Image (tube, rainbow, N blue to C red; front, side):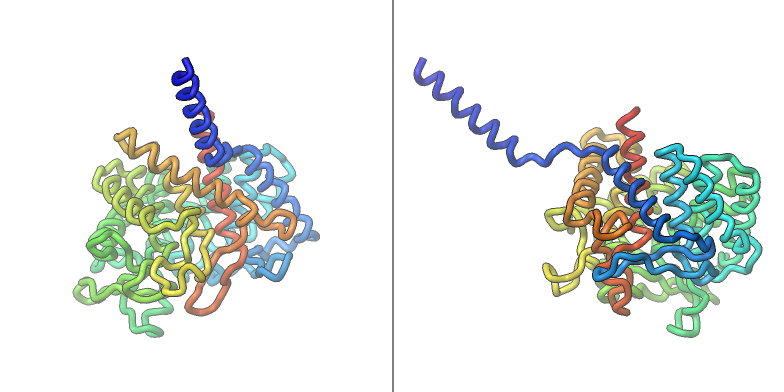
Length: 400
């Protein structure tokens, strides 16, 4: 009896010791309510509103948003309206709905303007895409269809991809450049092809994804930020970086865009090659992460562990992995991606990364463009956008 009781005591101690090391359960509704409160703080800061000014970043030493005028050049202008749509989706608050509509309206002119670069997808799909999804406003549908047609003018059939940055053709000597971020903007083309637009838009998106998969990754499935192509032959010239540490390094947000993009392309096409590829590039990303699952801005920065983190990359990846977890056929892999995404959301929702009362943003510690020393260790509007998107995706998963 003594030995049996002693054995049970040991088991009990080990069990409670193990429980003490477990992370607390993640309350997604608490996180979304927090986001909603921060949205209202931002609206208060922006009052009286100038709907042509969009919040973009908050410096570490500041507690107010830097706002930028809506323009073809300001690529982040669609994220704040997108956040308002997500907040309306969560709260059902008609006051938020009205604000989302008003901020959307300031982007109207972009659907009638020549394409400046690939970011038209970010600008219009995050704003009008979410608006149409939630309201079925036919005006929004027309604007999205026009925007997709404009974006398609940057497609080069000789190369098979969209020209991301026309401005870099002469500036950096990149005849036809395609950046990894561009994968996200393919969603606008897929949507348009299924909602009354030219079916060729989807063919362009597939071509872009195929060429990116073929040329913009190394043998270990890490990605180049930029692929440079010859406009005459269409052949791949080289892979380089623009926002990463070096041409051979792994820029964290670039890899995050890739995971998100190829997961989305599989959803839109059902082609299993994209699903397999999304898993390969996700797996290498997960292997490179530090303990808290929030990446350093570039996985190869020699300053690690004293290098800046990038919460925006974590938010993008968390959202992507939640969707990916619903697509894979192996239960163990599905659980792996879902658990990793929840780990990321838990870290982002902790006091280390949450802005809390110090700022009206959701998150801190994102890195925009380290090589240019721009927006380093700041709050970024797109980090907040993808964080809230991930939370809503997780909430839907729990409810179903």
